[in-house]
Image 1 (cartoon, rainbow, N blue to C red):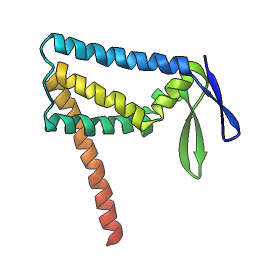
Image 2 (cartoon, rainbow, N blue to C red):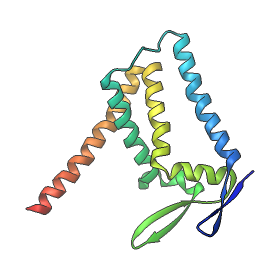
Image 3 (cartoon, one colour):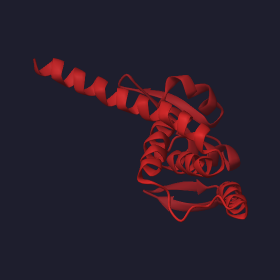
Image 4 (cartoon, rainbow, N blue to C red):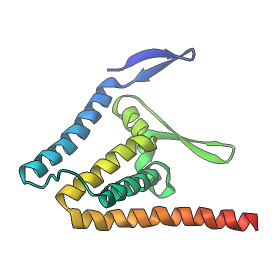
Length: 158
């Protein structure tokens, strides 16, 4: 079921049932993992600052990889329409129902970031050593991105 509303003179369909299903999947998955962690006595009073930074930076990098990187374009392709605008490739959600809802999810860095950071946090609770190792790869890659930007900026100034 979609709800139609007026947006800037045009009608926009919102796939509310698919949105609700995706929210239920998110809450069920991560809520279930948190519940299992609590039942096993693995739910700490708080996470360390190191683990929070690791989950945040790794989640940010993973979300950017999923949403914007060319290597993950095949994952987004069934859910987006690709167009070119002044040499830049733009992806917009396509279709309706679940296809559109997933298209909106995979083109939104903040949305994917929520899922990615939740995945890293629950990973820290259920498999901390493996999650820290995987998260460290994404954190190191994010640091590398900033070094590339700084290097280019320094070179451009010289």
